Image (cartoon, rainbow, N blue to C red; front, side, top):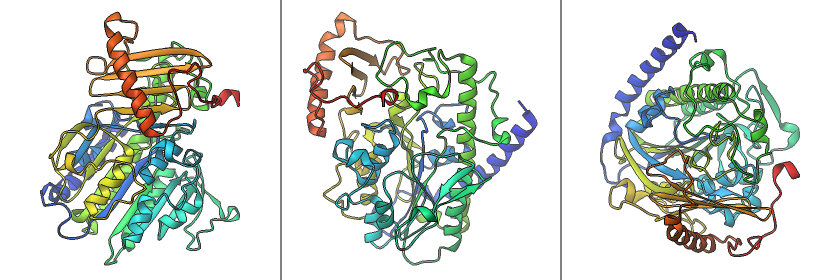
Length: 487
């Protein structure tokens, strides 16, 4: 590990952090929400970023000064989750839920398209008089992008690409986005491309209308391409491996041959996983630096005092936990995501361990901006949680993956049921005493009543969500969605 370069980079980040912290002090002000100037919205979304990858929230192995500053100037929701999805490309339904405020069972084709009656979040703000700007990854159809944004730049339609060879479209006012107009932007990392696009928008912004910016990064999704400058900040020989590292997953969860799981050989080795973790962290640190550039421009343009900033990710990632690499599972590392909200009227430096979904962001931003929530939205506003008026909006969360994994968690317990080609398996975890989900208590005879109670609650939530799964039927009463490897 090159300590000189690492320390130099750290100091550069800390200088940015000092400027940001002093300029963001205005965000401390506890003004009444929905009063004063109409707020701008800056929505920062990452790809495959696990919840515990921010230094100030407990991971001392990772360098994230700009995200740390955002946490210190806002509210961090430390139990924010995705519901899951019926596709191996979990980010597609997850992003669709975020953008429409709807559960994964009330999407069309797992969110591949967003029909016109599913009003997207930026579309609503555009209708409400905002300039809406979109850059980066859009995995939910070209028509929905076209109706959502009044301007944009550097748009990547699809799920993933090489970070140094990104297939892009420029903003097209006609909204057609023809294939022949696609081009490849090479020799610059995707995170820098999208940050540059955002900076150009902010540099030229001089409108009386408020803006809604949606910056959708591809990082830290694989391939884990990043410059040596950032890789050298992490020593892959000594970086800590997770407590729940396993060489292989202990049973067939139905999706062990998905593309994500084939990025490293079986069985997993500590050496291999350390390499993956180091690269994963390096990509997040590089991403943090790009976010710092955007924050600095907000400061320079004197926009920060009236801008609500939302930071989150579309799902997590195992990267060696439970013998897995990907996100096609219901463990905490894959369904739990970071969620930070900062801005005028938002408390400073607070953490809320309340259970919430990404789809709850939609109605929350509506309330923060004073915009009526469309009837198509199913999420629950977090506004009363932000103001400290209530301590929860949900008693439990339902998790799904395809038609062979179903899960539920409450304030303490996580229950997961599997039905893989007729072979059933149950896991029960005490998240209070076992946050790494290492000890399965499902076979403990003293937990029989608890499992039955959680299963009954899961059944209720399945019906409420519109799931066709019937846990009492041998095949759960649904046709099998094939695993990736069997397609």
